[in-house]
Image 1 (spheres, rainbow, N blue to C red):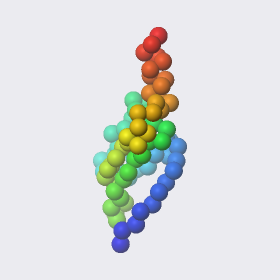
Image 2 (image 1 turned 45 degrees about the vertical axis):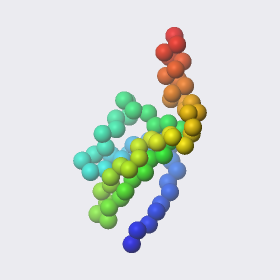
Image 3 (image 1 turned 180 degrees about the horizontal axis):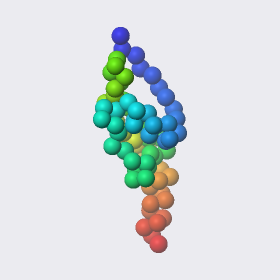
Image 4 (image 1 turned 180 degrees about the vertical axis):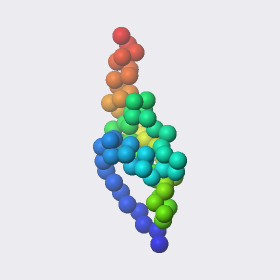
Length: 79
């Protein structure tokens, strides 16, 4: 039986979820990768508890609106 669950969280929970559920561990290092506000991550979780990443931090629905991490990067590059 297939179920859909929506989880709204902060980045720390998402990083932890990815590390624990993605087969072989998630290749997403907190120091090297930041999640955008409003980003959508979708996982396909198998009955045995392992997961496959379908979308990671997808921000296409924001229509080019600057997210906080991208705005900070832009400011740092301007200096």
